[in-house]
Amino acid sequence: MATKALKSASFVASVILIVVAIILSVATYNRWLVLRFEVGPVYFSHLLGWIGALFIAVYSPIYYYLKRRNPDKLKTLLNIHSFGNLIAFIFISMHFAQQMGRPADFFPDLGTGLALFIAVCTLATTGILRRFQLGKQFIGYYRTLHVGATMTFYIIVIIHILHGIGVI
Image (cartoon, rainbow, N blue to C red; front, top):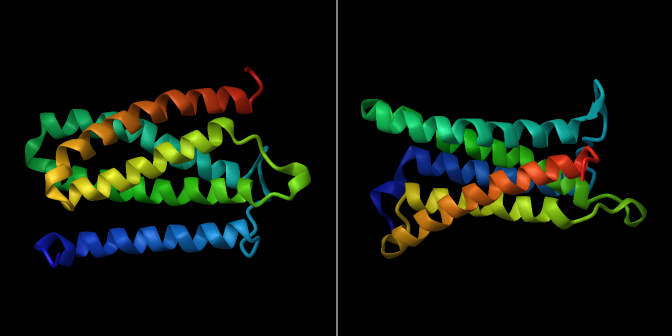
């Protein structure tokens, strides 16, 4: 499994970002890293989740369009897509961990938040598997899962936001 892709700086950076996500999420869940402070009218943990979701929601269609329009810039666009989404994954993971680490009396409703987090985890996993062609025999399946998770992300993030602001 010592392929060229696994030895690349991009792969190492991706693994580091995943490890950072895990460390920061564990620290947030255990309240070693406190994100429950206000930034303007919202809590910082919510702001992180919003920034992460907004990046994924906005840049994904931009990437889809630009990679076809400017194939000569594919490497740059892919790096922005990959690393931007991994940073967004870190922010969303920290938000989710902060919510899950709340005391039992204030435990959140798991509905849309859990579904959204699963969709984002699926996006990150299938994105890494596709980018570095891990398990080449399954690349077609990874693409199908990646696209499906993207569509799921859009549907659930809208419902999650509407639920969070009390519209539904």
